[in-house]
Amino acid sequence: MSHLLGVAIESLVAMLLILTIGYCMVLNSRLKRLKADEHSLKATIAELITATEIAERAIGGLKHTVRDVNEHLGSQLTSAERMSQQLKNQLAEGDNIFRRLSKIAVAARPATDAEPPPVASPPRVSSAKAVAAAAQAFSDRRRPGGLAA
Image 1: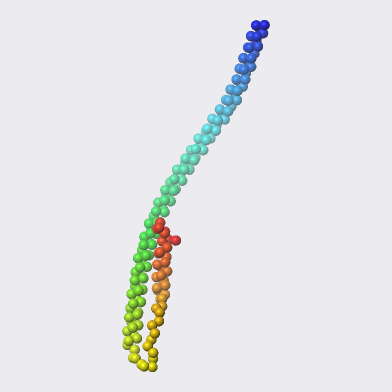
Image 2: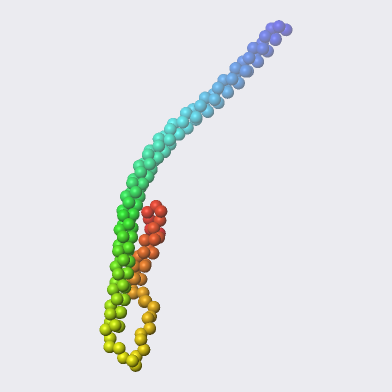
């Protein structure tokens, strides 16, 4: 019986060894697939790094362009505001001169008793004043970042 028990134990060990060899073969095939996936993943990561570097350079170029445009537009808006203020001052001075000339013309007319004295009419807005008001409204729409609305 001891001989039979030894053969049974040896058979059990042989079966376990066969199972272990089978499991090692399965693990080996899985490791090969994992190695292949690792190579493809490395290639994908390299492409992603290249694309990221290209995108970073493009973003840097866009930031530089935006900064240049913003500075240029800001200086143009500042110049437009100065011009608008000059036009407003010149229009005010022109209206003042026009009122004085009107007063001089009215005073220089010969006075007749049949005509009633002229009634002062409300001042009319000249077309130049309307243009100046429109330019001022445009310059007032300047955004805090320096860009017009």
